[in-house]
Length: 161
Image 1 (cartoon, rainbow, N blue to C red):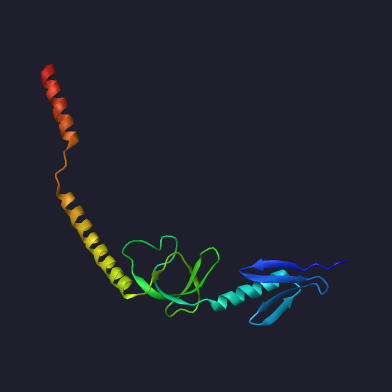
Image 2: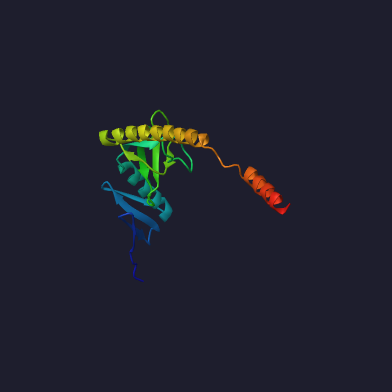
């Protein structure tokens, strides 16, 4: 019986199965790794790929949660620690020890720092303008519909008599 080599590709790495030894093999950093389980080899590749990830300094919104990207909020420094295959971003905020999922991050550079500052100014100007708008609108005299109806009903009674 002829022994065939089974080859499998995973994240750009070629994995082979040795039917005689019933082991999965991968060559990494010029050293051959092997394990009885394909999943163990995949986990090894995932860990190896994670180590190759270059961390990226970013700005992220301070608040967390579903509505974390609201207007006018402040931002803080963080570092992207990994990106999942599906595009999921994981960050560590400055001064924190644990990573967390992040929906959006901004490149940490002088241009973005200035834009974030200007966004904050614009937001506060908008808030002030909205308060002024509300205050002016509150001063408007509103038609008293009840008085008009009563007046109209009273005028109709006078016509009937």
